[in-house]
Length: 107
Image 1 (cartoon, one colour):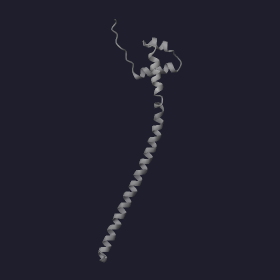
Image 2 (cartoon, helix red, strand yellow; image 1 turned 45 degrees about the vertical axis):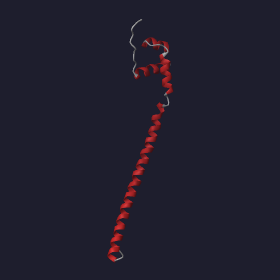
Image 3 (cartoon, helix red, strand yellow; image 1 turned 90 degrees about the vertical axis):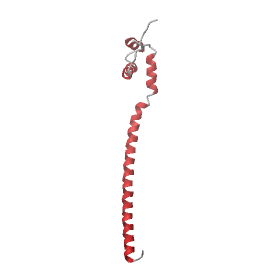
């Protein structure tokens, strides 16, 4: 029994191998021979990539959602500022009203 160590491929290496195969430039057997791995490993990586293909399109959707969220947040901030200003004006008017009633003797 031979003592062999397991080879590790980085995500970039795996992606490169999958790209080369999916581009139709190289066969599974040629890639397996070049990188010294089992021919069944490459289709496994291809299936993993295809199973997660929707993630490639999520970024575009997130960007649109992020923009909508930022616009919504800015609108909320403006409305909160308006409410704060309105409350300050009402408080000042109430103070003036109370002062004028005290002066006139109504309170």
